[in-house]
Image (cartoon, rainbow, N blue to C red):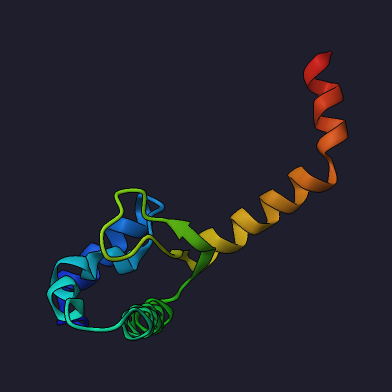
Length: 111
């Protein structure tokens, strides 16, 4: 169910849309959670996230945002947003440059 080729396509698509990949499991997981306590539901959802993370790492993806929002709600409201390794590193460098040189960029923008 989680490791199928179709599921991998869903994980990649959600990642490309900068949404948590774990959302792909929502329809399959929802019926299984109905009879669980809140703490069991939380643990089950965390387990799903861990398995998705394992799969993403196996394919060379890295976390872009560890607490991405699944604005549509549903089973998963938060989850890791993934990106191919090179993209994640590039984004981290860009964020660091923007933070470190913010004043410079603001001054240049005013010119």
